[in-house]
Amino acid sequence: GKNPRQPGHGVGRLNRKVAGFAGLLLLIIESMKMKIISILTGAALLVSSASALADGGSVTNELKDLVTRINAKLEADKKTESDLAPELKEFDQLMATHKDANPEELAQVLSMKAGLYMQVLNQPAKAVEIFKQVKTEFPDTRAGKRVDSVLAMIAQQAEVKKIQATLVEGT
Image 1 (cartoon, one colour):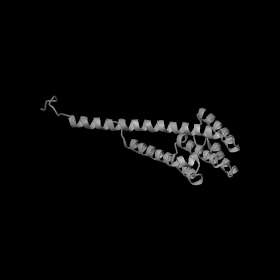
Image 2: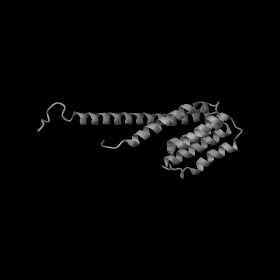
Image 3: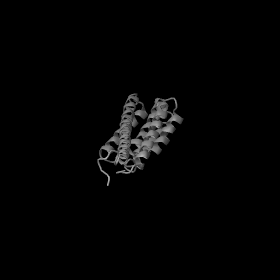
Image 4: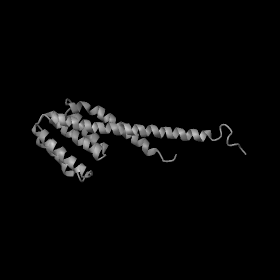
């Protein structure tokens, strides 16, 4: 038979496994980067909302209150769309009640709603729809100007998830 110590025996299989593992490792690293970016985006949303909310308009104060109530629900592990249905409706009510308010504040309301769909409810398609609404309705606001980069990040995240879904453990 063949001598297992003979050079080249099983190297092809080993190379394929190493290449597969290296590819998986790159995907995991990319996924971790995306999670970090997502967390940073969430933090940036909250920080930007805090700074935008510092202006203290009526919309701003109501949004602060809404965000506080959402955070309380999240801490109580209420993270489903049905758990958050009243608060999701409240975003729309804020927009309708204050349709003539400062565009920066209104764009912030929509951005926070989109962020909730993206990071908590894990519904990127719905988040994209809302971010596009920000860009359409409030293109000259800080949030409106950031939409393209946010959409690019969401698309990149979706691509990573799609690739991860094709990977099978042990191959």
